[in-house]
Length: 112
Length: 183
Image 1 (tube, each protein chain N blue to C red):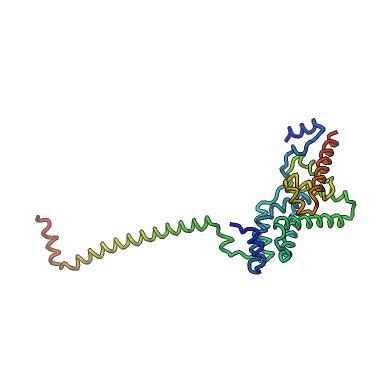
Image 2 (image 1 turned 90 degrees about the horizontal axis):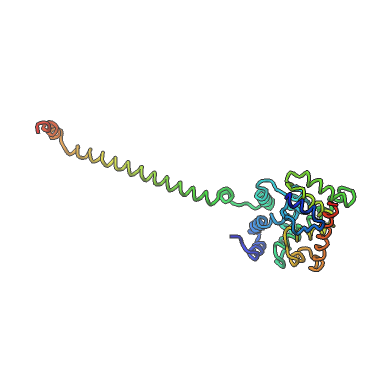
């Protein structure tokens, strides 16, 4: 910009077409988003809450978390079932054997 | 995907879809129109007021829009009229000479939190403020936005020949302002 200024001072025939056309103005942060919402409100336009608040990436994240939770639940249930099955089987076997036979097994074992 | 101009015009005619179509229009054109207005009124607060008026006029005038012109042309026309009305009212309120309003605009610009220009850019704005209002409008549209003369003709209702002449004289005046100031 300094070189632009000095060249302008040196050259009497200023060519504005050669100057920067960048506008020297700014706007408040999120101005245009806020403005659009304000106008929509003024004309009574209401987007559904979900559309206003949730963005597509939020849907994706929610879906991903859902899949993880489902996997976790599935894994836990399966694990519990396996444990229960083993316990049930043990109870079943024990129920089929009378106490005397069981005592025989435990008593005879050391003599082998 | 945003609807086409034809689809938007069709949606205007359906009361339950008008507000939705209007929302698309606001979001599509608000920035362009804001900068069009801001270059004329210079301060952000004033530009914000005029932009609101522009869209409210557009909303109230949706029934009158038959799709004879492009939506952008129609909106630019409303924005231009609102801007010129704003400047006229400001002139009347200030109850001072015509030149004083330009001075007020310049002072507002310098005090504006959202002006972040360099010395040269401020000088260019000062030079532009020396132009008559309509010429300023033509200069801004051509110089900063590079809007074609045909589009400008549709928006401003001035012939292409007159617009070209107006821009040519505006450029000469601004260049002279810079040259005289440096002497």
